[in-house]
Image (cartoon, rainbow, N blue to C red; front, side, top):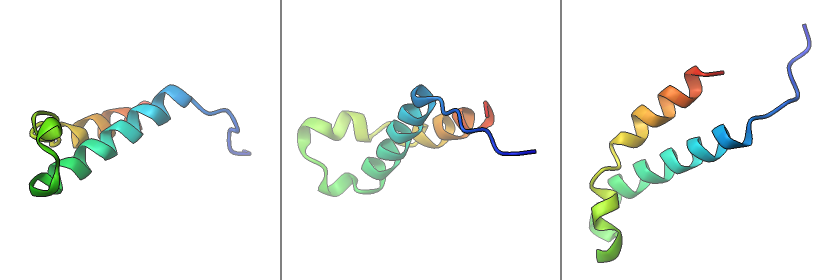
Length: 56
């Protein structure tokens, strides 16, 4: 069976946001003060990525 060529760009954007959240979380000490509240919840990016990958 050939692989599907259709992409869900909404899911791609969601996975991109999840990856960025995790990266902010791991670079917390280097993040500007304005992004620290967002970076504090970066651990949620792992769950978000896992859920979005499971929908495929």
